[in-house]
Amino acid sequence: MKYSIKDLNKKYDLELVKVIKLIKKENAKIVLLQFPEGLKPYAVAVVDYLKERALKVVFLIWIGSCYGACDTPVGLEKLKPQIDLVIQFGHNELMPEKF
Image 1 (cartoon, rainbow, N blue to C red):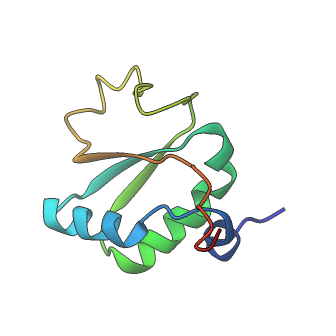
Image 2 (image 1 turned 180 degrees about the vertical axis):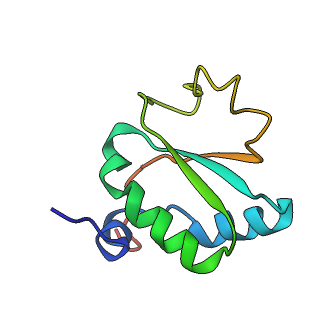
């Protein structure tokens, strides 16, 4: 099954516009994206979306385990000097606008 940004946006708001602004503000060239297990199926769709809007950026997807914001990638010592920005995503479902 191929997951899309459209499918993702129905369930979650990953604030991708803010991500794009941050990448541009930091002038990042290599960005590591870390997703919790529930969002990993959408990782490629997110990268495709960001690539369309943030030119000349290399995106890396952390495929190791991630169970929350405190679960930072381990073993990046060799890559760390080359990575300009690490972005961690969470996935709380959107609250309904009306109760």
